[in-house]
Structure formats: C-alpha cells, structure tokens
Length: 195
Image (cartoon, rainbow, N blue to C red; front, side, top):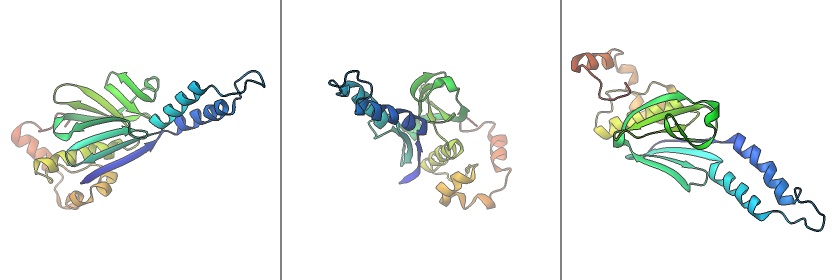
C-alpha cells in the first residue's frame, strides 16, 4: 500500500544542464569548421547527469521509505522500523544539490533548502531534500504508528499530510488536544526520539 509519494523536480539542474547539452551536441564548442563533431564523452556525461538528478521521488510503501533520484538508478531504501528519529531542517546553500556528505549525514537533494534529517537506530544519519518537509515527517510518523498497530496515538500536524493520509486524519477533530501531553506525563517519556 502506497501511504505517501512526493516528487520534486530539480528545475535549476534541468535548466542549467540543458543549454550545455544543446551547445555540446550541436558542436558549438569545437574549433574548426571541418572538425565539428561534438565531444561525445562530454555529451554523455551531461546527459547522464541530467537523467540521474532531474527529480527526487520519495515514497512510503508498506514497511519501507524509498527515495530515488532521476530515473531510479540511485536509490536509498530503509525500513520504517529502523528509523529512530526525524526532524525538519533547513540546509545551507553550500551543501549543494545532488548527493553530498553533510553534518546531517548523506544528503539527497535536487532543489531547494528544506529537508528531513533521519536518524536510524544504529546511529547512522541521512537527509532527504523535499519541498514538503511537514508532509514527509507526518507520513513517516503515521506510517510507523500504523505499523505498530496504534494509528490514533499521534496524528499528523500538517493539512498536507491529512490529504495524503486521509483515513487516519478523520479522527483528528474528535481527538482532544491534550492527549499527546497526557501520554507523556503518564509514562514520563515519549516513544519517539524526535518528540
């Protein structure tokens, strides 16, 4: 069952690579009129970069979170049960787009500066760039709860998450606002590391 799916296009990547692909493909960078064959290696590298990084799709299906870049050759797939915590972050501009090592672990990003940092139970960290960070964190939270068999314990905090996960959000209006805090007061701590 597909619980969440969001695709973000890398507009800057697309529009910065396309002119170079056209110029190299047309032979505009080659000097002599008699030797106007496009540099094939450069053209292949540019087209490959475009196909690999033009979009980022994040899906939550059954028990896994999967992030795939471009046409899907580069993927990050983890089990939801392995997630210890998650938080919405704002990344620095110098972290760039693509795949980079950052203080939040490996960053998978194609556009923008919003991301969700995920910490796994074994201590490893990574971040997924998205223009829907609230929806992604709510979807991870709710998917983990559904997996544990307790869909009413915590509900999504953003309206976008409610449209994605409408079945669980129907009870949101009937749930008292103090329920989350009373659970914490009764047990002394939260089940999730990021709460």
